Image 1 (tube, rainbow, N blue to C red):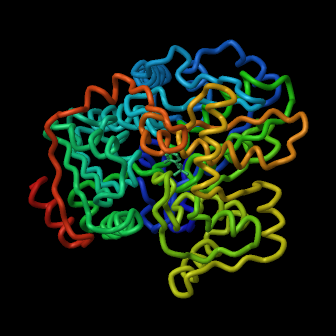
Image 2 (tube, protein in one colour):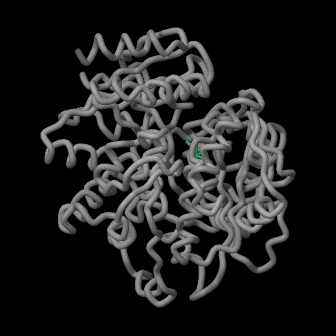
Image 3 (spheres, rainbow, N blue to C red):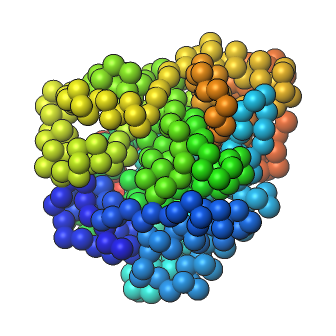
Length: 460
Ligand SMILES: *Cc1c(COP(=O)(O)O)cnc(C)c1O
C-alpha cells in the first residue's frame, strides 16, 4: 500500500514513511492510494474476533512493510493498556447505543489511536536507528493521550503545546504530571488554533523539520485515522445484522474521528449516515447544512476538545469530494487563506449531504441532555458525548440503529457534569491518583519563534 498527498505534490510513500512524515512534505495530508474493501461475508466472519484481532485484520490491509507477527504484537501491546476487556464496549441506553471509547489511560478516545502510534513510532525508530521529535498542538485530549503514548520511549522527545487555561484541570494535570525526561509541556497564551498554527508552521519549515526529525501526533498522522477505523467496524458488529445500515453520531472537532468513519464506509461498512455533531464552534454544521464554509473565531464551550474552527482532517474529505484532484484541494486552501472561506459547487454540496448530516448543540442543550440522560437511564454522559447524543435525538431515525460515540469519560469533564446533574461525579482511580502530583510545564507566548528556540535548546 502506497500513500499519496491530498495536494498531489509528493512521490508515493509506503506506510512506515507515511507515519514518520506526518504532514506531507507538500503541506497536504497523506491518504492511501486506494481504499481496500471488504465484502459482507468477510465482515460476518469477523463477528467473533476480539478487538485486537479485528484491529489486526483491518490495519494490516493498509500496511505492507511491517511483518504480520510484528504488527500483531504491536496491536496487542497497544490495547492491553485498556481497562476494559472489550477495549471499546457498546452499551445500550434509552434507545441509543453508546460506543465507549474512553477506557484507555487518559480516559478519552484518543488513547485508541495514540497507544498504537506510540508503539509504532518506537518500532520504526528502533529499526532505523533514528530519533524523532514530536511536536503537537492540543485542545486537551490529544496532548495527554500523546504524552502517555510515548512517555519514556527510547528515541522520542515530545513537545506538546496547549492553550494556557483553556483545557480542563484534569487534562492539564494528565499532561503536566508526566515527568519523564522526554516529555515537554508548553502552555501557550492563545487558543488551540494558535497552537495548531505554530505546529503547522514549524512542520512546514522543511529544513527545520528535517534537521530535528519532527513528527506529528495530532490527527493529521495517518496511523491515527487508521486505528480509529477499527472501532466503527467493532461497534457495527455488536449492533447490526448482516447488511443492516447503522447511523453513527460523532462529536466532532478536528474531523479525525468522523473521517475514520467515512473510511470505514468506503471500505464497505454499511453506514446509513455519519452525523457530525458540533458545539457552538459549528463551522462544519454550517457547511453541511448551508454550504457556508467560512471561518469564525473560536468560542470556549463545555466541550473544549471540540473548540476548533479549522478542522485539519477536513482536507482529507475534500480530496474525495473533489474527485481526488490535488490541484483543486490546493486551490481551496489558497482561497481559504486569502478569503477566509472555501466555495463549493451545488453538485459538491449535494454529495456532502449524502455523506453527512449535522447538528450543532449549544451549552444549555448539552447540560439538559446530560441531566435528562442521567435521570432517565442512570448513565452519565460527558459533555462531548452529550453533544452527539442530543444531535442524534433530534433526528428521525426509524428502525436504524444509532450508535453515539462516547469520546470521553464523564469524570474527565466533571465540572460540566456536576453542573448538569447537581450531583458529584464518581472519580475513577486514573483521575484520583493525579491529585497533588508534581508537575512540569513551560509557559510561553503563542509565538512560533519562541517555541522553535525552546525545541532547539532542549533537543540540542
Ligand atoms: C478530540 C476529541 C473530540 C473531537 O474529535 P476529532 O477527531 O478532533 O473530531 C471529541 N471529543 C473528545 C472528548 C475529544 O478528545
